[in-house]
Length: 347
Ligand SMILES: [Fe+2]
Ligand SMILES: [Fe+2]
Image 1 (cartoon, rainbow, N blue to C red):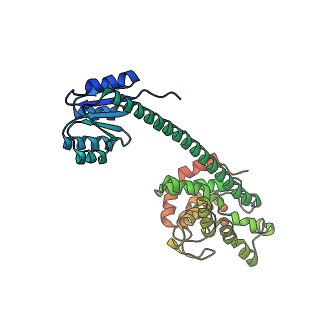
Image 2 (image 1 turned 120 degrees about the vertical axis):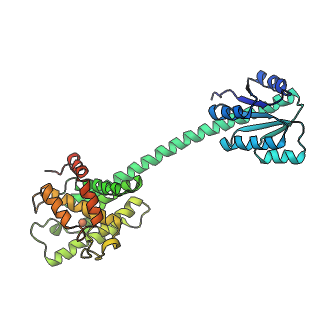
Image 3 (image 1 turned 120 degrees about the horizontal axis):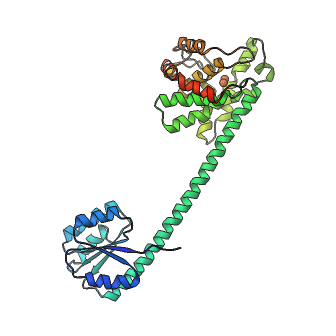
């Protein structure tokens, strides 16, 4: 691997060691840039990425400490050499603990300085190599994580489709329910992560239908009371299928499966929860699910017009649905209609 040339930024208010530094650095191919004011030193470090070492050739201890800590605040990894002739042991300790890498007593022998610079250049090269390897590794880890996430999302979709497969009329219903639910979450002010959670978890709301006999699921006439009791268990079955994993999507899906038929007034199932007792995810999916069912053609019904659907949803605010979420959804009905356009129900 080709290493970049090392650059020293040399800060001095006297010129005592200037020639020694130049004579040590140039033969081993190290650049030296000079600066004489702290302002310029700091600006050069901030504006140039390629400074590797700062030489501070300075006598006042107080000032030195300030300079070192100002530099370190900006870049912790920068190597700082302090050249001085007057610091006693205690002062040197302070200089080291404030972040200096090396203290060099001047006058310093040019050959000694050169040997130290060579060592430092080697160290800097290995640090860069390590840094670039770390970056490459990080990129690979990120790639692997995104592939795993993609696979997880694919599996979620398949699980949702398995329930849809049994429920033969629904077409891309589950995908639209995911999109409307994410839309409501977005307009409610939910984070990107919350919106994504709704997008991928809401399609799992009816996974429990896998456990309902086809004779009930696809019955064209009205269900008997006993059949309706069995049908309602799809909420609990869905929860049982989806809960207890380490996936946040399945966790949210379990909550949604269990609570998407609860009603705001407490007359829903399976628990008869009321208002805010119903998990937010369930309250959101309830609106999305009913809206999509009304707008789609099913075995037992034709699709409703948008006006009929909106009127019905409005009348159900505070009865079936959370009134605040209902308003949010109806206020953004244009975006919901765009979702239908991009994912039309199967004819
Ligand atoms: Fe359901
Ligand atoms: Fe549904």
